[in-house]
Length: 245
Image (cartoon, rainbow, N blue to C red; front, side, top):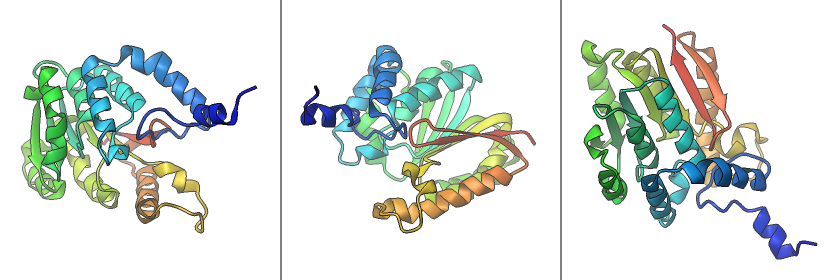
């Protein structure tokens, strides 16, 4: 018979900063140990373990989501991509490893220091030349890009994992920049499961603050005729939007 300590250990995710919404922690661990970790590139493992030591590690993309993004980009033959919200660069590295040698990623984040924490690992992996990093708010950059017609429909894939209160503002601009048939991925669209929590549920302050913005985004995406959508319970929830017009 399992002891209380063993039961507690088996019901706790071992990955630091985990975001899985699976009801069974053991099942999530099985996915990681069977499918993700054995195939995880050494550079991604190194960056994941480095990020786990950071005080804000909850912000990182989960390992299973990193694997999903890497395969998705290969499946759609992505070459020109964008990432809004970089942190230490785990999802950015997953993207860079998936792109061809001449692939490009425009990466934006308000904090260069976090990006530079992971940059040596990205450089060692030999993919830093694919990345153009811009420090600062993304909206002013996107506004300038939208003004130039040559940027319209220029991106195969765009990944957004940044300030949830601006997701709809990003969408208004990104829909112009992604190509017809291209994808936009919005991260955290299930937001710690809070999207189905009752109004009086005891939620962490930041979860409660951003919940309404996530709910508003999900409602807007579902009603947008310019896209097809697929919401997946990977990580903290990711909604893929395929531009159709």
